[in-house]
Length: 189
Image 1 (cartoon, one colour):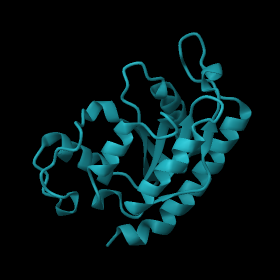
Image 2 (cartoon, helix red, strand yellow; image 1 turned 45 degrees about the vertical axis):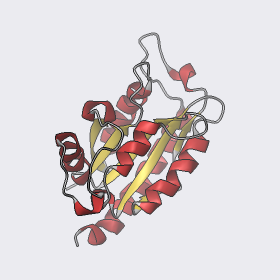
Image 3 (spheres, helix red, strand yellow; image 1 turned 120 degrees about the vertical axis):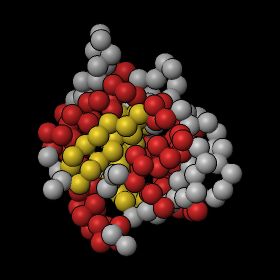
Image 4 (cartoon, one colour; image 1 turned 135 degrees about the vertical axis):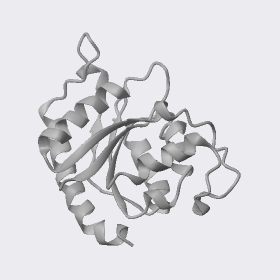
């Protein structure tokens, strides 16, 4: 049985273009065959700035939005965060969503699909790795950086990658599958 991969749209900004990139990646992951991918949109959870009164380690969540987010995160074996770069940093919606939980993230690998201007979101991808490792998420070195990503959007705003982006995605998915299998015994505790 294939591991469950959550492809998480990290930006919740109303004018975001991340869903287009994420839909492409989810379809690409499905064709790749190493995972059972699920598209997850942070905007669907409407997480306010962290509002739980108890520390997330207790898993004693008081709010329905947190319980729904916890169930979603716990259901995955691996993650791919599809994220833009905001001021050399990941979107605050992603940082907030990561901070909501602790145990649900543990011992799972993550890949990063970053997009932006000339840097392709690489500064944000590097910055979020510190937070991921603190939560015992293994951010794999292989990633997908999409510089000047708007050039890959067609008239309907659908994302149409080039060969280099697709090759990066295939490499990342292969490594993500290896890490997911390797970490599985640690998740079973």
